[in-house]
Amino acid sequence: MRGRIIKRKGSNNYTIVLQLGLDPSTGKRKQQWITAGSSKREAEKHMAKLINDLDNGSYIKPDKTTVASYLEGWLKDYVWPSLSPRTAEGYESIVRCHLIPALGSVPLGQLKPEHLQHYYSEKLSGGRFNDKGTLSQTTVSHHHTCIHRAFKMALKSGLISRNPADAVTPPRPQHSEMHTMTEDDLNTFLEATKETPYYVLFYMALFTGMRRSELLALRWSDLDLLLCQVRVTRSLHHLRTGEIVFRATKTAKARRMVSLPPSAALLLQEYKDKQEAQRATLGISLKEDDLVFSNFEGQPLLPDTISHAWTKLVKRTGLKGIRLHDARHTHASLLLKQSVHPKIVQERLGHATISTTLDLYSHISPGLQEAAAIGFDKLINRSEKDAIRK
Image 1: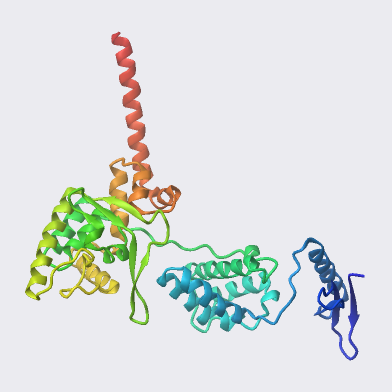
Image 2: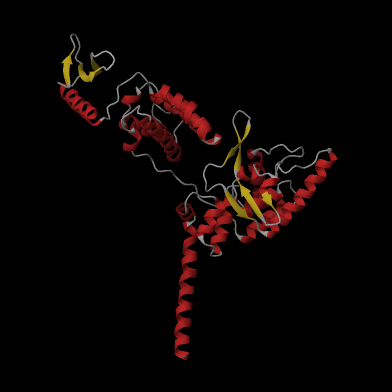
């Protein structure tokens, strides 16, 4: 007999006694006692599943690991060593502020999809898991991503037999509306920026589509101003602790070579000459590994400081709602409007796939489709006229 169900004296609960075979070291039979609730029918169903798991090799012996203790280990052993500092900070905040208070006491092997579905519902509606206020669909979607990633690792490690997040329907994230500059807006903004310390930085953001973290991590050794190229290999992150760290870019596609417009290369050369002159007044020479964008003494610029400076300049020029990250969107949009192939845009932005680029900038497609239709019409009509002449 592979298993049996007993009802303990003085209790309404049933217990499954599962036979696990012989212990090779002692020759004694191994048993696993599993509490199965107050319903005999449910206990029988549970035992049948356990026996099936034993037969197909997917049975995992229950242990005392809770969701809280597993997530603590996941943060320490996987998240911080493997992910970008900003992503790691975000996951740690979700785990410590939300998941552990709500689900931490549940044994890891007993966490079910209904636990997670209820958790999402409570977070969205302001229920008992929501002492920090009602969360948006986008935020709860981020929680789901964190949960799925955590339990995917538990499944891979053999701690659970299935990922409970696979059977849950998370809320759909609400994407914020994208705002971009027109050609005239871009020129107006840059003209207003010329007398600020951030002119070259913002020029590069608009003319290359690079991320803020990538621009702030650039070294002079990453630039080839003769060939008009910049090599993107790393990013800068400012942690909540105040520490500034540099990390290699997350994906192979993000590590890329971006061609510089000649105007940007000339501007960077002038900027480098000024930096060398400034350092000379301090008795310091400018090194190839020095940061391109830094303070007077060569220390990194803080990302939030840059974003605040951008926001002030945007308001001053009347371009409401344009974030620093929208410089990236502006670069991509203006390229696509010139009929630059989306594959080239993908490579410049460092997107992992071309589908990401196409999904992000699908709003531009109506104008491109109209131009394509007109161009096709002209091509065919010209062919017809040539045929008539012959």
